[in-house]
Image (tube, one colour):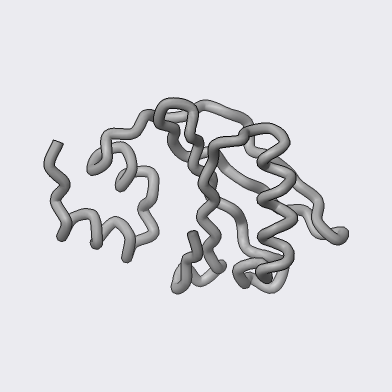
Amino acid sequence: MAIDVARARQYLRNFDFKTLFIEELGWDRHQMQPLAIQVDGVSYTLQALVEKRGLVTFLCDPDPQGRIPAYATRRKLETQVAKSLHEHLIIYVDAARTTQTW
């Protein structure tokens, strides 16, 4: 399966991760309830987007100020998700959809 690099970049710029993974990379849709995780009194929702052979990709909501969670918070989220799904990827985005951290 050849990847259309220009189209993949456009999906990344548009924060259209689900289409990127499914249409360009050949991943599968994943049906799972969102994970709600509390870290330091703040609730974060992680939405499962896609999966490939047991590796699940999640999209994490921004913090209450609309920012990507701080590194220490991301590590705590990672630890909590790993308890349920060892193989996973978390994509963090800000509320304005200008920044993403994988």
